[in-house]
Length: 255
Image (cartoon, rainbow, N blue to C red; front, side):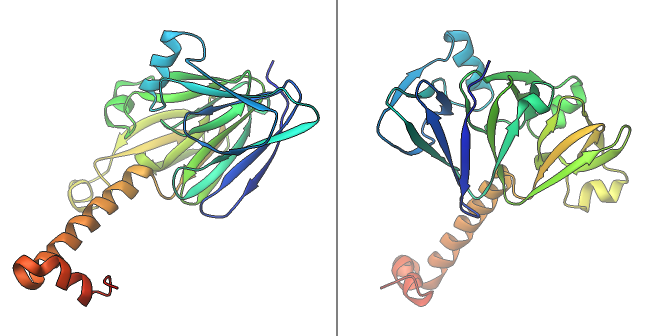
């Protein structure tokens, strides 16, 4: 049975979630996610159930260790966790979703004590090989609140039975266990080669809730890498050996 916790979400593009704990209540979080905590809260870092559980979390993109924040003081106290990059923090009440929800690797931020973070493998070889996230997803299990971080803007869909949605593979953030997840090829030779969307799309079939993200972390990282390479080229092209300094001055980066 998971602890019952109250929460508040702050911010717009770079959000944080504040968890309110009564005496004896605890919240579990990905290592390094904590922003601040008030008096009476103690940190307890462990593998969260042995070596095997730690290794399973590593497979899903999380750290080997997980940290519990237990309130041992009197009254109420608060601990807050920050999102790792621009996006939204989504609260998931697992008791309203059959005790289970699937999400992309490294989406987990924090959860009430009693919620488990496990490995989920896609059922089909095609989905595993070409699904953007590979065979591995995160499975959140329990009957309490869990918080996941989704990149960019969140689009929430409630699919009817048999209703299908085709999505860029990297933009599938989380979905209910009742949703069927598969991969299909992009139709048409020219679409596949020149459409800019890749060879494969994810197919989600209802019933169930689906969360989509407009800015997958992989896409954000790719844009940063491309931009950094472009900036280096511009700096070197300004004046040879002194290009870095002169280029910075010309571009307005110098003081």
